[in-house]
Image (cartoon, rainbow, N blue to C red; front, side, top):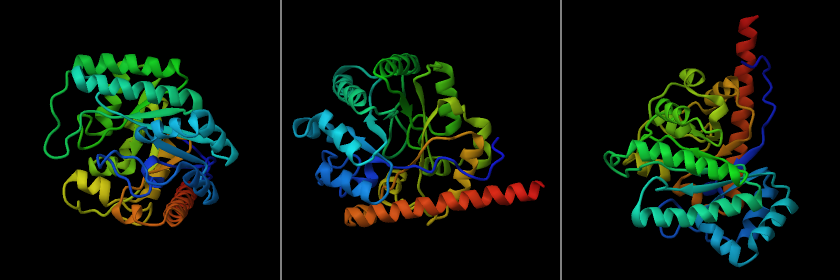
Length: 307
């Protein structure tokens, strides 16, 4: 447990949808309508230290400036942290697996060139109702294989527990990665998914194997779900600290549990993606920065009470 009320690492990473403009998961081909140079220069100008890339954007980048050109562009703009996403169906067979393997190659190649520390991957998702049954043996075995391949490419893979997939809670996700126990296979922990799954922040320190927590993402939302969980997660998220999810408390708890990495900011909202990119990135960064400061205040208050 940390004794200091100063959060040493306040670097912020704009997760892929936060800086994609008018693009959203499972909508069209998912590519950003904004050219990559404009996006990177805007992210740098508005104070971000990291960015995330969706898989769908990588082929177009490869065909234009190339991955080495992208790496140079990131370096020239002082972007220090890079994450990649999203790989689905990695445990399956047939046509779905063939498509997944195609994207696996794209993501691993990009990670190696860009120095991306982590690739976010998915589990069995249901947009409505319950997710389809998963072959548990294949799920474990293929995750282990994928994690090893990631390690060989100089990166890691991070599964994201979601209330809409077969890893519904942090507890289930933590049990899974502990069972596989591959050093290159871990978890993404997101405020929205933790809260919507009903997990108490106070339980996180006991539930999470922090050596296997590879990505932290912060955001916010109202207490009441709007539409389905899927509709709510892709259209109704709020900036950190502007909803009911007590994001500063989440940050405080994760920090006290041992997190010392940068903070991903994942804003998926129709209102956000309709904004001009510079406005959207400025609002997201300012809100996240304020939440980090509020988390430090909570740490200080707790420390004072303990004296």
